[in-house]
Length: 522
Image (tube, rainbow, N blue to C red; front, side):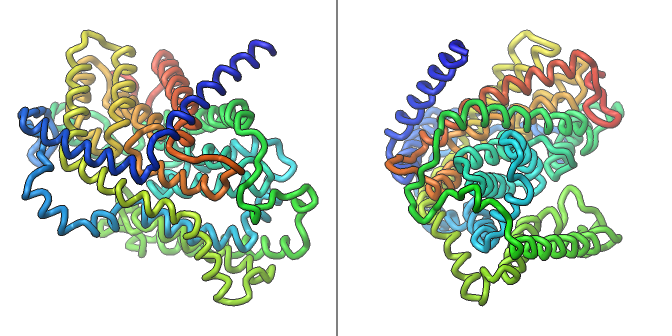
């Protein structure tokens, strides 16, 4: 017990150092402004030095060699375009629309009392670890909604934990880490599976004429198993590390009242409201089925398919928003928390109040991401790292682990999963194939690294999103900043990466297939 207490003390001190050090950084608004200026200067220096990288990528004609040069952002040509597109760069910053629309729907469901009542019904009286595990499972599987799931899961996690009288930060972290740190895992097949498989197929077909079984389900066995494993890891870290360190929740906002045990008991009116929600949910699911299942249904694409892209996959944000609005509305009408349209407008407005700080930070953050991408610095870092690993004389499982670690490092600077795979896939898929490693294994290794460091990436567009959610539940006399997020996510990131590598290594040693018809080795 003493050893455990000593370990927690050391970890708590480390997390406190990260938090204090991170929070001593300027406000995110100022920090992203500094980073933007730094990228401008760095792009100028790299361009003057003629820094470039060359790599193989895929095209309609097969594999082709591409050379990327550092682009000087301090040029008249770039700034003319930048000035013209300034507003569009901000408005087009993808987290803004996701967060605003999601908070509209979630706020109606939360302020009507639905989230609180649902949690009383489902998890009140259940052990804390079971509640956390459910939040983690929901978070991991939320990547069916792609980026929308990364916003949805922590928002729901915070609301659930608050409704149960637990520290909302722990719920936000559990949902965020599960959705973003476990982004590639899922019990079902998501659009990401089809997207990456399509890239892998084009790479391998351009490299060899031999038949290789490549399809969207080729990582499914590992992914489905990883979902349970990752949810268990998130649960353990949340309960054993994060929750004890966070301590008791004492909200700075006096309107946020931690519910008592008596308030966690469902009333007859709340039960009626939940029945209305159940009926609404059944009708909603039947409607989705009717609009998706038949051939040439509304939600199918021109080819009659749902994957890789279709109105269903591209419209998940609308579907989630509509669902929350409907169940919040009908619950509120039955329980009388919604009596007119004014109540709905008030609830939606409260959702915006919680993300106002996020919208401000997004102005310089959107410029930083835009500049970082346009300068080609992310590509220079990624390709340089890939070539470094290529020159190392290793093979087999150690090589697979090296690819995981390389991807995890690249992920700190390049957030787009498909972009990274387009950069390093044409290097490693053929190289691993020649060493007897199936492309499905190569792709799986990539996906592990591509997930676990999302939550600690300094260029992540979701750091201000999570800060905005945490601000709502800020404790008295607590300062919030980037350090607050990183100090809580670093333990998750390190543990998830290590455990997932061990899990995958055991999988390879046993020789289990990656998915249907796709062995680990050729």
